[in-house]
Image 1: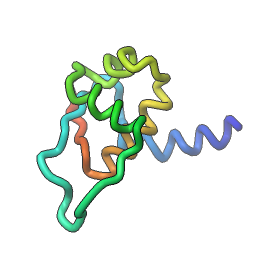
Image 2: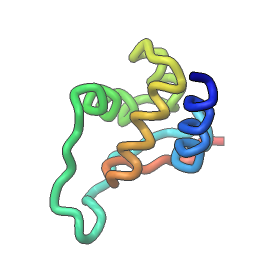
Image 3: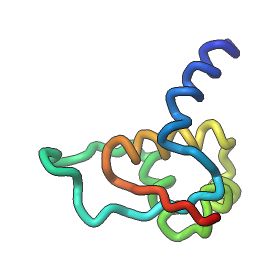
Image 4: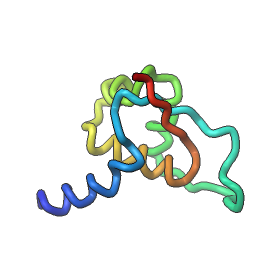
Length: 88
């Protein structure tokens, strides 16, 4: 349903403000977090974005839609596994 997708997008947007951003792996998990469970899809995304020039470049490499990539990136940002850097 379009309404559900729009609501989900609004929840993702604070964590993924732009596809021109670059993702970097965090050197350590946030204080108080001992581990992170990452799905196979999120692992592929994490590897791709860590070496891509931008989220859009990673999206093309992975063959994903912006929505699917943003959902994965938001989960990784919330877990403390990646940080986004503004490249503009």
